[in-house]
Image 1 (cartoon, rainbow, N blue to C red):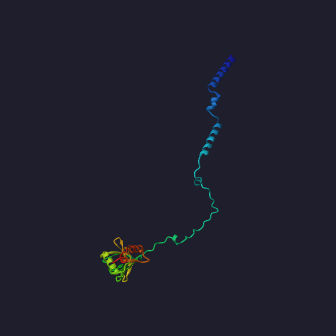
Image 2: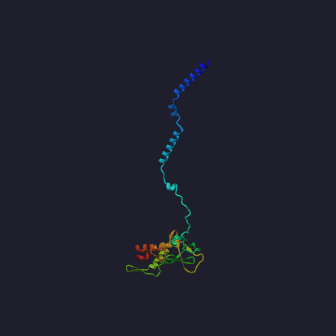
Image 3: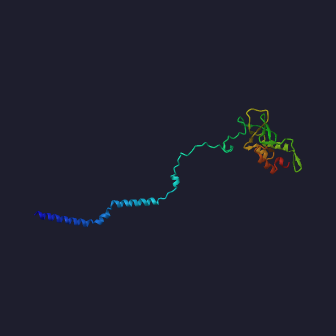
Length: 221
């Protein structure tokens, strides 16, 4: 009786094992779950393809080579090649204590000089025409000095001039820069031919223009 039961159990086990083998073949099971060594090979192959396909851009800028500082030596800066490399403070054309002052009722004494409020002034950068000077134009002489002083006086017409003058009234004549409104007095006189530009002044081109156009003393009476 016991032998028959054991045989029956063995038969049932064989049937169950055969059914399991039919449901899960060995090849299919291996395809579903690859071996660990196969997965490692695939991962390594993918990593190599990504590295090989990466393009390096500006490698020297992103990762510059290391420079050893043992051979470097600090030296003093070199001196400038000339004075042009040194920043210098611009020189003032007038003394520091001079101030722009309104001078009322100016009266011309020459074509580039006038009296006002007890002061005697000459326009800086110009050389006026003396009142007794006579000019010659194509063999025709005419009193250009008197004409120049009259032109300067008529242009001012008693209006106030804005000039840089010393704070105290000086009994000696003073050369100063002046303007009438927004017009530079020296530029007006020289460009119209009623005064000449000093060699060290700023009205050289204005005198050339007056000579070319035959203005004032350089032209006809």
